[in-house]
Image (cartoon, rainbow, N blue to C red; front, side, top):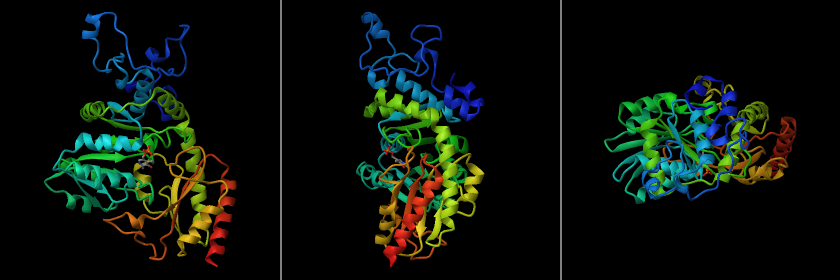
Length: 411
Ligand SMILES: *Cc1c(COP(=O)(O)O)cnc(C)c1O
């Protein structure tokens, strides 16, 4: 039900069958056969005798239990399902959060003395990792303009070991030319890692576009219900073996309860993404027509920055996009956000419910500017929306009241 044969099926079909191996769910007809892999709580595996203990599997590659830190069938089913959805992947490691997946991948590739090139639109904790943890380990991070493969090529030096991409960037939504950057990286011996949380493998297949390791925060689309934290890293056999070694050395393990929640979320991810994408596109197009809005940053929307690359490389989108207000103040922007009734104010995204946060990238960028090229200098106050499963007409009316509140606050 999984593995290579699965990849020939459409993604909707693979989402249903992924990870449901009979060895984990039971063989149909057997009294314990079930649809979803049960929550398999275990630290200890019991052996029959010392000889079995000695010869027992030390790794779980053969699907047998050894010790809880290597996972148990619930976690393996999730990892297997994610591998099955990721073209070009030989395996997937699970991590207790998306941030742990990013650090797990970076610490697999980088060693003291190395230089990491990071896209300037990276998720803020990724930047913090470069400036903090990695720096303390003797690894230098340098940033490059996300929109310029040339700037990336020029930034490569003898010590450059790795590049971290994120496309679209989860605040400012720039789409990178991933195939071009990955090709340059491969040519120059630089290992490429991408944070593919926005698109998920349903929207973008990084490994088949030349990237070495793809990372996701499963907290977002896969979990989908704002009640679980988890991350993943998938790769071909070379890097998968190394990711695994690092994760086991650090001691990363996820709970079977959380793995079961993530697996449950995965089953409906395709439907949720389809609905959220359609509604986000509808709302983005509407926002673009509103006089208060200077710019909509939604790669799925024709005319929006990054749309051409998105249309070339992606098979789908999601409900996360941003827009920038025409001038105004931070206070007026906050009045807009506070006036919204159907959008929760909070971090994260990709859940079934809509969320809103202010966006102020100027504070964190170093290699490229904000506002983006083509935007007026006074248009700096951004709003990020994560569109959930509500009726888009209700969300539109709510956003209209928010824009009215912005007008009032602007006087
Ligand atoms: C949320 C997020 C992460 C981190 O995921 P957590 O599960 O919250 O640790 C990483 N990258 C992007 C783009 C994110 O939005």
